[in-house]
Amino acid sequence: MTESIVSIDSELCTGCGRCKDICPVGAISGEPAEPHRIAASSCIVCGQCVQVCSGFDSSLEEYPTGRQQRLRQRGMLDSVSEPLFAAHYRGDIHALLAALEDGSTSTFVQCAPAVRVALGEEFGMGYGALTPGKLAAALRALGFDRVYDTTFAADLTIMEEGAELIERIQGKGRLPMFTSCCPGWVKFIEDQHPDLLENMSSCKSPQQMAGTLFKTYGAGVDKVDPASIFSVAVMPCTAKKFECARPEMDASGHRDVDLVITTRELAQLIKHKGLDFLGLDDEPFDNPLGCYSGAGNIFGTTGGVMEAALRSACEVLTGVPLGEIELEYVRGGEGLRYADIVHQDLELRVAIVAGLANVRRLLDEVRRGEADVHFVEVMCCPMGCVSGGGQPKPLLPAQHLEAHAGRKSGLYCHDKKLAVRKSHDNPQVKKLYADFLGEPLGHESHRLLHTDHTSRRRA
Ligand code: SF4
Ligand code: SF4
Image (cartoon, helix red, strand yellow):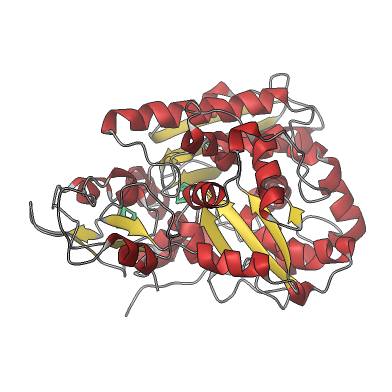
């Protein structure tokens, strides 16, 4: 069910219509100045309505529902002092607090790339301030037993998705191949275009890959019973709350991810616990599942998955590394863009879609067999995950573009500073294959890291 994840509070909704305008799937209806509604059956849980909503619990007005009651209804901490907006998502912080306080549970956490360039905003830092060290330190101070990183699994995704693309180019599977790391996009295809499901990569998203490794490889490394691990993901994304609950995400015999909280929820928890975020000394993520490359890191913005894939695919397929790995021709903003890649004897044509509303023309071309492309990256949110529904919410509409641009440049800046910048060079990914998984698309990789996508279209 999606209605319990993103919803509109009719008491607070002013009917401004911003949510209806931004919703990429037309899931919101309502008359001007009247409370709006979300159709759960078509909502893809991207949370963009939450980012733009203007109706909030002004202290000048009386509402039948009191603030503390509203916080509880939303699953939020009593200490949260920020305005409560009409469009909101379900909070999951109380379940996390219970797990952190349960002495019999081992708490493993992962953080998506886009979190480290946005969390600082909640503590007065500028847009795009880069805080991976403070993020790891804060999570450790909150009591997590292992502080791992989704970015490791982004590198792993490149290994698996790259191998899958090569197989398809060699004739084993349908082209173009669609990326599968954005759960809003996956749900959209399952809901509205199930005839194109074969184009979707079978890779799980990095979040789910990391989660399944926590309870298999990670449990072995740490010598803990996988059944005792509580697997938490900190995400810029509200759709990840939906994804982690998908019933099929338990190939290891355990839930890949038990709980997802957003960047904003993490900030609220840090404040609730009285941690001085700005005063924290930088700390590293734990190894082995916290080691990452610059390529994995840029997954957090539009074009990042494509750039990471090309950095590896061009080298692996031709044996010759790219001369320049900062691929400006796949970078960009909201919209649909194409790029032609010629490297040695390799020729690829790719498409990048930022903002789900921009994908429809391409899907029509794919359906008609007229899309002359091998690989398509789709991210639902306007600038990819840096602009996700669970990120800090800029209060003024004019601040959105500034925030997204700042976070995006923070990711590229981080990439430049990292010693390893290609996913296939990540030493811990190599070790994982050598010690545990075997090879990309091998039996164990397939069992744990891939999934089947199925139609959700109602008859
Ligand atoms: S979460 Fe996304 S899809 Fe759902 S109503 Fe809001 S904008 Fe539309
Ligand atoms: S673009 Fe990123 S934040 Fe937005 S729905 Fe997709 S995965 Fe979530």
